[in-house]
Length: 204
Ligand SMILES: Nc1nc2c(ncn2[C@@H]2O[C@H](COP(=O)(O)OP(=O)(O)OP(=O)(O)O)[C@@H](O)[C@H]2O)c(=O)[nH]1
Ligand SMILES: [Mg+2]
Image (cartoon, rainbow, N blue to C red; front, side):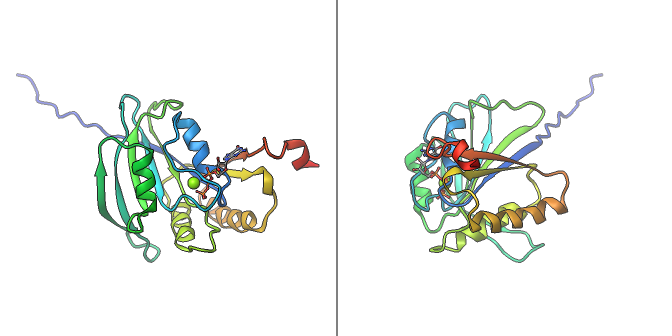
């Protein structure tokens, strides 16, 4: 007699959130890992959504959905309302979703060529700069992402052209509280735009 075993596939994730003040180069950094300009980048407040990118090594195209995410009171479950689905996502679709006022959360899956999943699936998050004085929903979205407990690593992108600004000081003090409360979370710093302001000058 053969036993009918049900195979259970439990996927576990390692999530990294990419955060920084506006225009430091978060989306550019993720695009370089993607090997294509999928995320919209520009020298102004650009990213208006949280973008979750789940690495699936063998998947040829990016597929995914756009949502309206409602941040509510602490300790309550956030509400995700489905808005749109696409099975072959390109930069135009993401640009349109990013500009749509109803959409503030995007979740896509596809192959990130510079990353290989091992025992855990890797997930990257792009986020809006929290210091956009024209739109405080950006701050609410990013602080919600930072204070949400599931990620293991913060990738903090420092803009070499504006080291030591108050906006970084404020944001890093908010992050420090989260890291103090959860010792399993780590942070790494990426010094970006060092080609514009070489490191020697930053340190001097
Ligand atoms: N010279 C130079 N320009 C860069 C570098 N990284 C990003 N940029 C440029 O800086 C601008 C902002 O880059 P983004 O990647 O959109 O920055 P972001 O942090 O995602 O910005 P928000 O989404 O608005 O918070 C774009 O014009 C990029 O081309 C870099 O290392 N060197
Ligand atoms: Mg961006």
